[in-house]
Length: 439
Image (cartoon, rainbow, N blue to C red):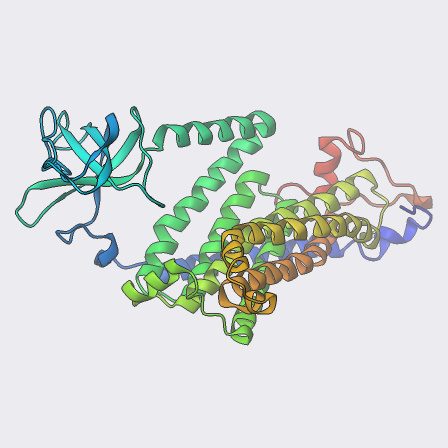
């Protein structure tokens, strides 16, 4: 990085720093106010949504599950009168000469009104059927048949404890390595989950337009995640403004791409179910909202890296101009783009792998496979994310390069710049040159 013309670095452009800082802070405050207003306007009503038919019990109610443990397992004839029923001891034997062989599992019911009793599950072996073993913890559906008798059926394996251990390990490792910043990042992740569950999903079910819901929800997540994880300072603010602008760009690109390619999203079974049973939700809007939310993670990763690079470069070389800081940080950004694009595309390709496998044995041409709705959705999603990612780098780097000089010390006569207090790389130096806290 050149140092030969330091006298021109701060005498002319330096006053832009404090003004730019005020402009950025003002923009973020204004955007935040709009986001809060949008949250109020889009907040879901308290009306209840009927449970769709595929998710109802035979009585028309929502599915209720109870805990159970497999206490006995083995093959046998199907047709026991105790199948799915509640009994206190051993199940009744099947009729003599049963035509079918089943995997018979005696389940100890461990929660609900029948806790302490047993039920019998009879499963005909085949693809997609559960393979139970003695000692397995499972969840069983409790419902009533037309006669009012309680009946049980298999729902899923119980994963509460294993999932809790995985999540706890994840949290411990993050906090152990990143310390307080890691803890704040986990809190931000919790806030993001709360926004998704308490605002976005209910608003979509309530029939609110999907794109505004996604933009408002995404902005709420970004404000919380970035400021919680990285602190309230100009470095984070430059990354936030770059990410918000990139998210809006991703929304525009997604809209244009979906219209141009006539994507419907109906190749995915869950989207078809939504269209069939939840008429208030637009599938194209839902697809667009998914594009927007899906781009947030990678955009956040890139923008915070670029902002940090620009501020660190500014603190290490107080004599560097904004143009030099931008050029140096962009070299980092280009490497980041190259590696992140691979991550983005391969992640979407991995998600579509089962579908690609089915197409590969169907004898269809590669052009038919690629242009089909199911694969085209993933291609467009990856391309839109990649474009937004690439454009977010210069945008965020430019904002950060300007703000990194918001509190730069003046150049002494003769071109010498006093070194930052505590050394170029110290916290004091970074705080001084980075204008760390809002004034």
